[in-house]
Length: 259
Ligand SMILES: Cc1cc2nc3c(=O)[nH]c(=O)nc-3n(C[C@H](O)[C@H](O)[C@H](O)COP(=O)(O)OP(=O)(O)OC[C@H]3O[C@@H](n4cnc5c(N)ncnc54)[C@H](O)[C@@H]3O)c2cc1C
Image (cartoon, rainbow, N blue to C red; front, side, top):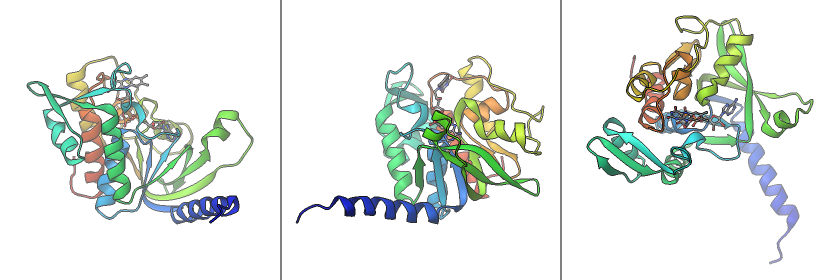
């Protein structure tokens, strides 16, 4: 049978647009497909929620591919080892309480499980704004990343969401736009994004988890974004806090955990 370019083109357009249409309204919209966002999305989808991840880049995984300084191994502490086990990521004990895993295996395993649980990933899409209804964030304004990169004068589209997770990493992009444009106060001591502080792994790992929470009506913050929002220190290339933060955000949204 001769291959038809027309059918190949039709198949891609048809399948993508059905998927996209179906996800114009979701239970949870996750902004940023780094470790915290992927873990959160997986737990939520496994609990039956309709979840979309919007990722600016072509690839999913955020800062995890490169381990530390592009040495593609990650370190997790005792508390997070079970989470990697659950995702089928192989770990090796380095010293008591410190485990390493291959960074690439970590990303692909977590991503594969999330997708098989039903998470839909929309890559190459940048979240540039939020929709606010009655003091609550009710959706996202999205654009193709190349439109943002090239500065084309093109209007974005909108996705409605019951809950949004800001897992955009250091830049806290969803919170920054809320701070700048929406009349919604962030639940931080200053009411604003406080900004990340210098390195202290011990404190940072604890605070990342503590600071994972609903930061304003309709928005949870997870991963490095949680750290930066509350002025926590950075922690260096240990990823346990990111993974556990994603799990905690999901549990809070599911009502399984309060703090
Ligand atoms: C400057 C820098 C410093 C770092 N310092 C540390 C450190 O101190 N400790 C540490 O553990 N790790 C550090 N990292 C590595 C890495 O960021 C984190 O470890 C880890 O990957 C954070 O996980 P995360 O899930 O919070 O977010 P990330 O892995 O950062 O993933 C965030 C994802 O969100 C996407 N995104 C961002 N904004 C948008 C948007 N508007 N729309 C759609 N997608 C968006 C990004 O493309 C990215 O894929 C650093 C990275 C950088 C670049």
